[in-house]
Length: 237
Image (tube, rainbow, N blue to C red; front, side, top):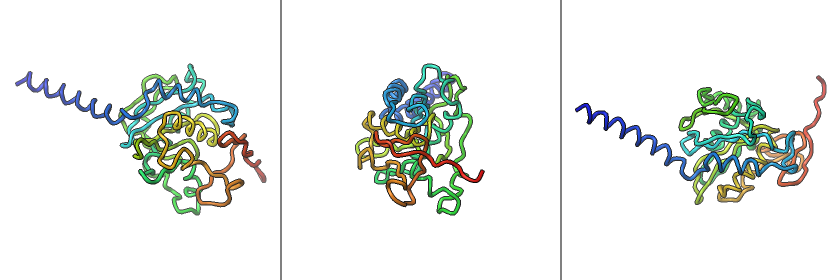
């Protein structure tokens, strides 16, 4: 009886591991994600660091973290706070997208401001700090749901064969640059939505006109290789 119980326990654990792995099989490995993240950086990504100091995370359709990484050999040279943001962006983009509706975190910005229809949405789906790795980037949890909601650029849903399979989150520069890098990485992984790589692209009212989907400009803002402008300076304080 004891041998049977031990066998059942071991078999059950192995099956759980297989189930989790299967949920991530169509998504990039850590090494693949890291290389695409490194390749995406360039002066036309804009921002503060041209997208060269990034955290990236990928979740599956269930919202479970499949992998995460940094673009720097020394993860402490990427903002430590960006780890949680990247994981939350991946969760957000996946959580609010469908097969027929790709929604980037950038397009949630205006909706979630005071006076708009999704104000206070951020109080739901709170982030679980157990999902964090130390600043050095080692260990950290995968195969669990981190949660967290972020409403600025850097989170995109991932698709294969016209079906949503998860989300990617990128953080470590301005939110506009985060979006550009996430977009480049997704395209390089051939995981764009059915409508193409720009189906859920970031929108700026200064160039695209007024819309509930718009996002503010950032410092040194580029979009698809074109300089768009700069965030407006503060006034009155």
